[in-house]
Image 1 (cartoon, rainbow, N blue to C red):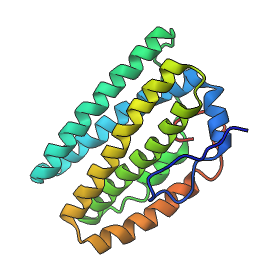
Image 2 (image 1 turned 30 degrees about the vertical axis):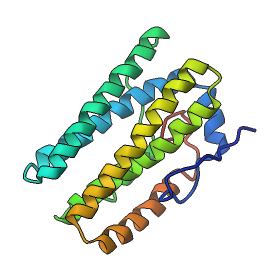
Image 3 (image 1 turned 90 degrees about the vertical axis):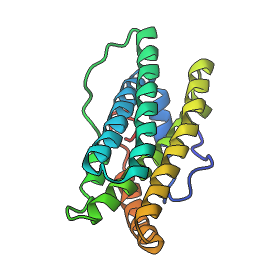
Image 4 (image 1 turned 180 degrees about the vertical axis):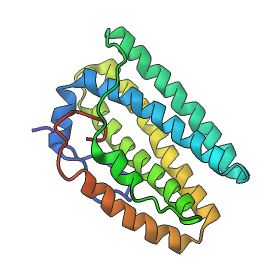
Length: 199
């Protein structure tokens, strides 16, 4: 049985199960394909926030950096796909992303806060899971690649947290993040049958 115990960002309410680790390591090609799509989506989320809230200068500046870095990671994962002769194709998404997006309240300024916090939670979980891949991947070069990426995921979580803390009262941020973190862990309580980064 593979261990899933690694240091994680402490907002996560439940660690990833060893079953996910086993599923992911047994399906690395699919995980890489899904990872590429996750990086592309993460860049899109940052850009969408920039377009929706262009007057928030600090946010625009910080999320421009994140969008650029996510696109760089997208390109790097695509290079791995090419090396392994894995053609780019769509994958059915797991319920995780849609489940979190459904928690974003429609009225402003709740929508802005929830968008920042949901994005941060996804980055926190990505940090944990890329760390698990780095630890357990049987291919040393790919393991090193994931170890390098996990650092940026933690930094991205920090950016989204700081932005939420910049635009909203800290107690409101902490309370809402706590609520969303519980839901985030509940969405991952049952392993999705198809291997995904967030299955």
